Length: 216
Image 1 (spheres, rainbow, N blue to C red):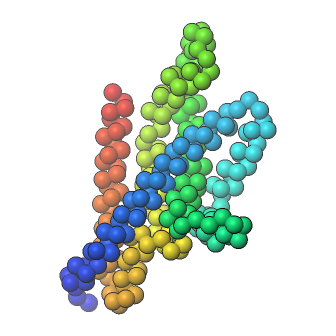
Image 2: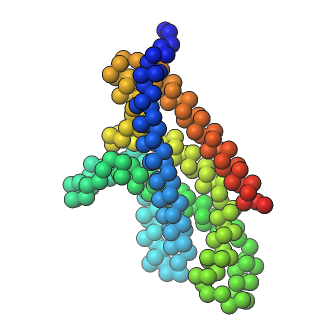
Image 3: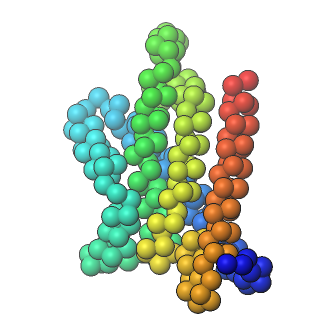
């Protein structure tokens, strides 16, 4: 077997297209997972069990079913109920919803790690409940959980190849398409593997830098 640099050159236009789709899905999916995860965490602290119980059931169901099944459901089943989404939109919603149930646990741990004295001080200052969350609790909790949230971003990146099953041509999808058209698998798949390593490494460096800034 010989390495064919011309195959790499031919694959690069499709690679850049796949990389763009991958980064779009990752960025938007991460945003949904971070925001929705925080919403889940706050709802789980609601005083009423009629709020906590449904949220707990939904998040447990989503967390304990495979992402692949959820993607198939969103893309192939929802249209039967009159809800049709584009492949990329489905991918973003699917990956964001799935990982929001994990980031929820991260936020809950961060909130519970805030010393009880902080709550007592806010009460002593007669701060409104919403104000207490905004300026006292959440800033401290989020600073504590940034590394864990970053780990889930990398996990989401590694799961983006699953999006290929709902016709999203991310990096692996483009590599598979190229390989089938040109009967050359080694070069495109190697390029994709290296790309995942580089992106994951750069993301880890960025997270370490952000963590150091927050610790100051």
